[in-house]
Length: 93
Ligand SMILES: [Zn+2]
Image (tube, rainbow, N blue to C red; front, side, top):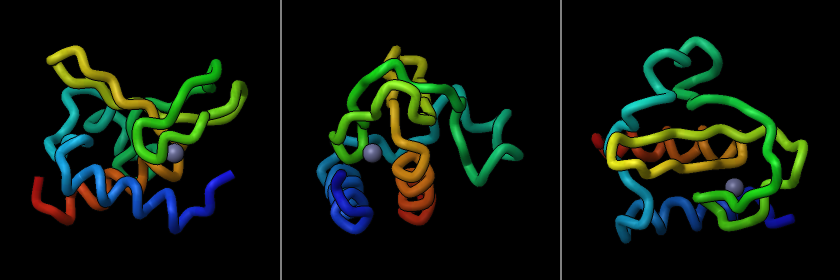
């Protein structure tokens, strides 16, 4: 398990390089802002890789996803998704 600081650094880097979008997702965000700050849709992973830190989201672990009209879907660990969203918003995207 990668430590949170390293994971957060990866996410910041991806925002800088454009690998992660800084634009608002088209689905997942607006309806669920009451769930937890800026959260996407929550679900249980069936085993996938995190779009933020690249670590696996183990089967059975909570994850969040955000989707764009382009068809792009981002899947994050809960913590990574919240961090990405914070960073995204603080960049003014
Ligand atoms: Zn992650």
